[in-house]
Image (tube, rainbow, N blue to C red; front, side, top):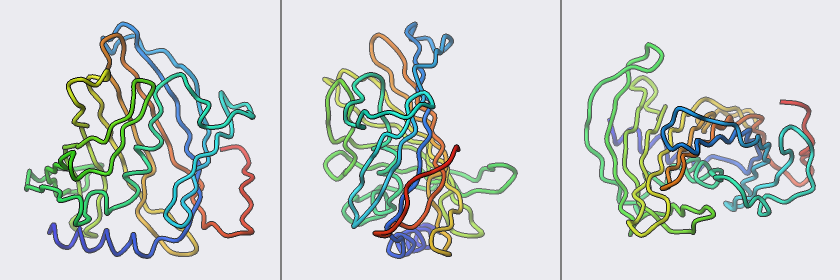
Length: 229
C-alpha cells in the first residue's frame, strides 16, 4: 500500500506545472496560553507562486484591504505559509533524501470514507523543513500521521508535530494539512486545500487557519489579478 502511495505521489509531482494560487489565512492568538481565549490578530491574503521549483509569496491584502507592504515586512504574528508550501511537494515526505520512517498505524475514517493510516518520522538531519518565525530559524524534523485513500492511493490528510530543538524559543508547533483535487491546465492534482498551524511559546498560543484557493497554471502572460474570494 505504501509503495503505491509513494509512486502515485511522486509521479503527480513530476507532472505538476508552474502554478499560482491564493492563500487566505486567519491568524489568532491566546495570550493566556490555555487555548480558551482566542482573539483574531488579522487576516492575510497571499498570492503563492511556484515557478521553476522556486516558491514566492506576495502579500495582497491585510484585513481584506489592499496593501503596499511586502510579505517580508510582516514582522508581527506567526507566519506559516512556508510550512504549507513545503507540504505541497511530495518529495519532502516520499523522496529518497527524506529517508522517512513509515509504519502501519491503523484503519480509520474521514467523512465516512475508510482510510489507511501510517505513522511517519523525518529526522532533522534529513529534513528540508525550515521553521522560521520572529524567534529564529532552524531546519527541524517532524513526525505524525498520514491518512491515505485506499481506493485512489492518494494522501488525504497529514497531522504532524515539528521536532523543535530544546533551546528554541518556540516550545511546540503542529500542522494539519487537508488535501483535495485541484485542476490546473485541465489536469487534476491532489494539493493542499486547507491547513491549521499551531505554535506554543512560554507566553502564548498562536494559530493560523488557511484555505488555499484559485489554483491555476502560471505562464508569462498569466494575469494575477483576482476578484473577491
